[in-house]
Amino acid sequence: MNVNRKSVCVYCGARPGRRAAYAEAAREVGTLLAANGWRLVYGAGDVGLMGEVARAAQWAGGETFGVIPTHLMEMEVGKRDLSTFVVTETMHERKKVMFMNADAVVVLPGGGGSLDEFFEVLTWRQLGLHDKPIILLNTEGYWDKLIGLIDHIIAEGFADATLAGFVCVAATVDALEAELKNGFS
Ligand code: AMP
Image (cartoon, rainbow, N blue to C red):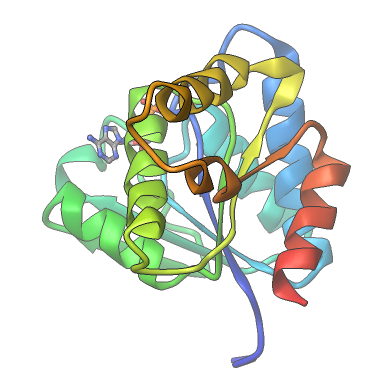
């Protein structure tokens, strides 16, 4: 095992979404992680964008680390052929194991689950509990409204301006790769 290897936690939709660009970007992310020798940490499902990222990382020879709770094994099709496959009892354990094994967090298009995961790591960062990079992959402007919401929260006095600074936004997968390299240097 390479102790210097970096791990990237990817939060993303358990569905593919309506635009082909989302799945394309997810595959590109899986490939870029493998190409850089970065381990994929994710929710261990074989559905939606989660499956796209993981299969692409595997095909490109990358290391994969997945964490899934028992009750989602069927619904999210637990992907047992990952380099490391961890089954937890609860969602909270899943999130904890994913986060503690990651050096950076990347959020691809997704739904409520991805948002929950994003806000958890963002608020932990706000509280000074970690300093891991948090990067939104804004494929086709998918996260524009979320970025606007964070600006609105700051403008209305419910958070310091530093909150926005904790989130990097990458419009493309190339920009995401640059942000990760920057964060790891
Ligand atoms: P979604 O973005 O809603 O497609 O969900 C993406 C991933 O987040 C899936 O693996 C879900 O199981 C997971 N998820 C859903 N709800 C939650 C939650 N409350 N906390 C943490 N993860 C969740």
